[in-house]
Each structure stands twice: as C-alpha cells, then as structure tokens.
Length: 77
Image (cartoon, rainbow, N blue to C red; front, side):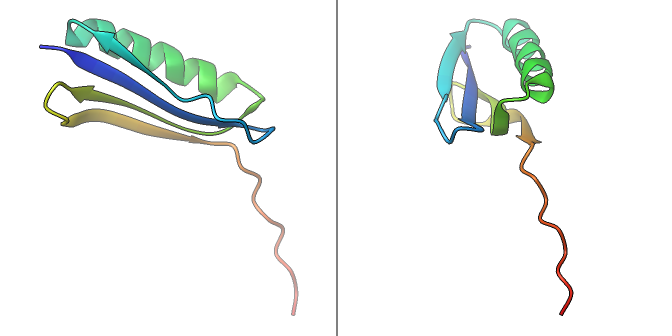
C-alpha cells in the first residue's frame, strides 16, 4: 500500500511551500512525518502548516497543525 505525506505550508513572507511525497510503507511515511513536524515546529519562518499522512484510498491516518501565527493583543473597550 502507498502512503502520502502531505505538507501544506505558509511561511512568514506569505509564500506557499506545499508538497506531496509518496512512500511505499507506513513506517517510512511516519518517520518523514515526525522529522517534518520537528523541522516545522523549530523553524522561525514557518507561519502555519498542516502535515498529514494519507493512505492510497484517501484516509488520513495522522495529522498535526503547526501554528506560529501571532495572537492579537486584547483591546479594551
């Protein structure tokens, strides 16, 4: 069975860095998934990302969101 590592990424400059990689077994896809997430969580130029693994039937087995968007300061009324 094939597994797909799907990376949807927006950097701090607003550019898209999305990609798709194909793996022949789940373990290889899982290793790449965790390495990608570690990289995205530690990168200062990643604004927002979704990383997921899908099987060849479109079933998403793993999914995580990396969100480095700044939270707005509360304003007083």
